[in-house]
Length: 329
Image (cartoon, rainbow, N blue to C red; front, top):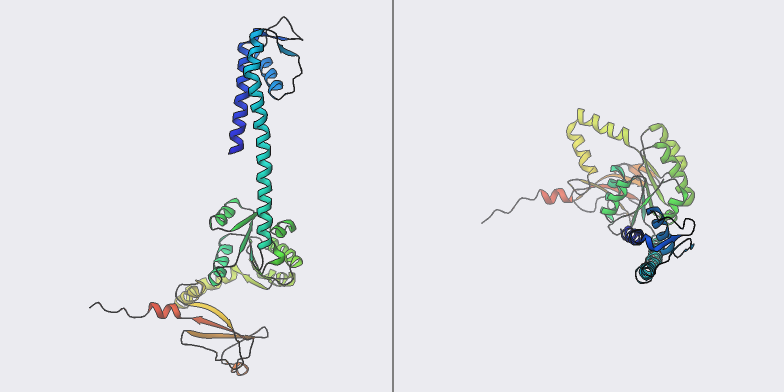
């Protein structure tokens, strides 16, 4: 906006000198056509070469009045025009320098953050879930859609415009130091390319991606994805469940909505022999040991070991909401 205002001011100064010259054209002479009065185009030309200090000398003031106006009016306008031009250039350079400085500082501070590739419904929901567990984690959004980036900025997130499988874009998002990378793109092909590029730059980050076709699951795993969610089939199963067993589907949907009713969560076992359910608000549904999923009742998981993961349903909010209200006295 400031640059547009300065451009408008510069144009106004040019027009002022043009009209001064044109109205006083009898006091000027064109050496190429000494017996003709200046046209408006001649006046515009003279004004342009004069206030930009080019000064070819082919059109010159010859009368005292014209020379007085050039000295008193045109010369200060020329100086103002130069100051305006130089000032705008310096401002642009200063703003770019400040932007580059802030960007480098922002990038240096990024560590153990989450990079979200694709900020549609899936990308936003996944980030909301992560931040609901860790509200201090930084996030960077990569998307080609301007409206998605505007939404990210509105939420206080840093957004980068570009393709998520572009090395330079991923480098700008500091994917090398990221802890999580969420790939929530609309195209399986782009998701595969993104996972390959991310894994090339970061061999320890957890890459979670969604895909539409089940046939691409193994390809995404072989590309370096840590977890692959087939969005279309998952939604289809819930739809089928809602038709056949609607109450069960309601529970599943409740589990997928964090902070409302039942919540599914996980915890690591800190010591050998720890109970599978620490209090009445936890209902264990699975135990993860050495990458394998076990039911809580399995013989080998009756005694928990350090490093096991317990997947449980958190009923805290349900029990809180179900507490009877104290009757008014």
